[in-house]
Amino acid sequence: MSFMPISLNLKDKPVVIIGGGNIAERKVIKIVSHGAKLTVVSPQLSEKLAELVENQSVQWIQSVYKKVYLDQAFLIIAATNDPEVNLSVYQDRKPNQLITIVDQPELSDFHMVSTLQRGKLTISVSTEGASPMLAKKIVNQLSEEYGQEYEDYVEFLRESRRQIIENIRDKKVCRQFLTELIADDVIYHSEREIWFKNRMQQYIDMQHEQ
Ligand SMILES: C[C@@]1(CC(=O)O)C2=NC(=C\c3[nH]c(c(CCC(=O)O)c3CC(=O)O)Cc3[nH]c(c(CC(=O)O)c3CCC(=O)O)/C=C3\N/C(=C\2)[C@@H](CCC(=O)O)[C@]3(C)CC(=O)O)/[C@H]1CCC(=O)O
Ligand SMILES: NC(=O)c1ccc[n+]([C@@H]2O[C@H](COP(=O)([O-])OP(=O)(O)OC[C@H]3O[C@@H](n4cnc5c(N)ncnc54)[C@H](O)[C@@H]3O)[C@@H](O)[C@H]2O)c1
Image (tube, rainbow, N blue to C red; front, side, top):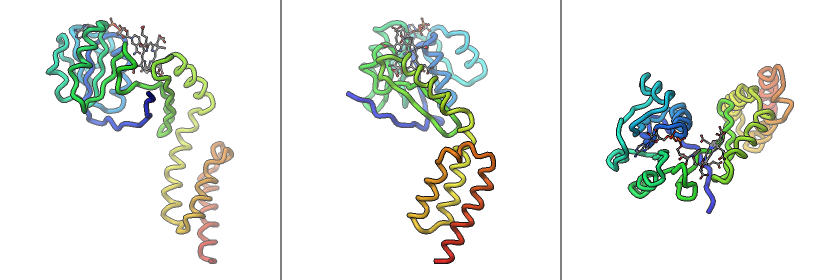
């Protein structure tokens, strides 16, 4: 079996995590940063999770696991330290609910991946549970090649692409210009906005001459 990587928009989506320990904490911090509506079900919470509950970033149901808590969930994470409880969460889920069981990668519908974020650029690495540490190591290596400068660069690409599509009618020319934008010397160009403006003018002039 192989897992297909996709990017999820979790804004305001209900996510339920069973268990409030170290592993739940790591998952919660990532999920909250993507705007999900998170509920943690657990008799106890780690210190950091308690802080998130305190500042209302996360809702806490102070209880042991019960099936009813899964009702509204879009995603479910079974993250207790009791394999039997994690397994019942798995068995109780509805067919349209996606679940991760932190101690059973092969039963899970999805895995959290190791990611490098540079603004709108996301690089994700997965080993499907074979070695999360290797995933992390590869991300660390990539973080040197794709430094902070990519955040501004990808913003520049987004805006430039919008302008190109708006102003250049010929699809082939459009593609040629878009390809020029991803050359290495553009990434590190100190005055790339000016370069882009001039280049755009050249393309527009060529368009008028035809
Ligand atoms: C990517 C990352 C995201 C995140 O968790 O946020 C993540 N684990 C991370 C770190 C990490 N996890 C573990 C260690 C200790 C070293 C070790 O044991 O290897 C470290 C290293 C560290 O902490 O530095 C132990 C571990 N992890 C799993 C098991 C269960 C098992 O294998 O049975 C055990 C053994 C439990 C035990 O028995 O002790 C299972 C899963 N962990 C996953 C994701 C999913 C598969 C992702 C993939 O393979 O690519 C999957 C299947 C399910 C899931 O949780 O979604 C995050 C990357 C770090 C980062 O980027 O910061
Ligand atoms: N996926 C991963 O990345 C990863 C990494 C390391 C370990 N693990 C696995 O994750 C498990 C949890 O690890 P941890 O370090 O977070 O453990 P932990 O002991 O810190 O936390 C366990 C949490 O589960 C809660 N809990 C226990 N029984 C419960 C129940 N019936 N209902 C609701 N909550 C309940 C506890 O109150 C506690 O908050 C480990 O047993 C291990 O198998 C997974």
